[in-house]
Length: 450
Image 1: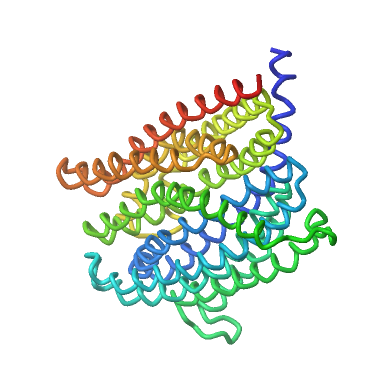
Image 2: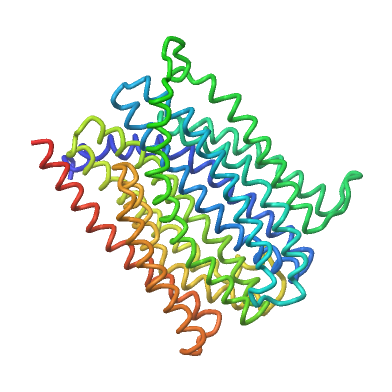
């Protein structure tokens, strides 16, 4: 046991050191999301359902953009691990160029989504508010993608604190803006639901400005004699696009199960849509914590991969899995104990509370699968492996989870809860497929190093 502890202790410590700032920032983001929904919930069930529908659709381009930006971290980490300053500078510039272009593409996608919103079978009384709220938050994609450019560059350099500080500062601004603009406090206009949208846009603009100023001060990127050629810049841009598109599709496919679930629940009832939004907000606590550990894992795996040390890659992978399994046990116990109390933070409607408490039980069931697949996908990102994981994710969600959710709800007769039953199945199969993929790449890395 002592030998085992000595073997993994450095990995526990280093992974948590990298992950802690990410987790703190993620918790800050979760807090803002929870407070957003709590404040909007005070306006009424209709406003909460309208925000749920708009946020569900906005997640489509947003998740893809976040996944696309994640490609920057392993590429930066590998160049940093190899000590390649020229490639680092090129990747930094390429990161902002590619993310800016992607932001413009995603805004065009948002315009198309806005046009088709009336055709998605949602309750008519939420449609106008949903469209208006959606149009405001869609504008925030551009500053957010700029922020993600700098965030992923910094994390590839093992600097996870920079994004944490900026994110927490923006969160405070967002909460204050919500209070002022939703309820019209201290002379501010009372904008209701739309006030939350304008507050989000303002916070993300500040995040973009802050990262642009801060990233220029990172020592590794301020080497004056390094000149980036056009050829190197084009090559770096190509690398980000080649890795970023499958990564974006990977995250998009994973999120689609929840997004499509929200749309299908809207076909059944406004109560179900409100409960869905509440439990999704609660579920982000575990998800973001696991993602924080995953970010630290990606950084470490990418640097070990550059140095070609497969033994350390395996040990770091195992340590990350062990960390999240412990997290799952603790979080799941808390959710079970508080399943009837947590929904009260968002709504006083007894029907919404009852349905949300049932959805929390399903959430607890798939927590373990979710955490494991997050770590495996982070390991694969660190190995710059994106195409195969993207295909496996599409199979797990589009061909298994979503069809099963539809069957359980509309054929099996389980209603809104039936839609949530597809999540454990899809996440479990995805985690298993990722396990086999990671094991295969670990064996391949070991053979290449001998």
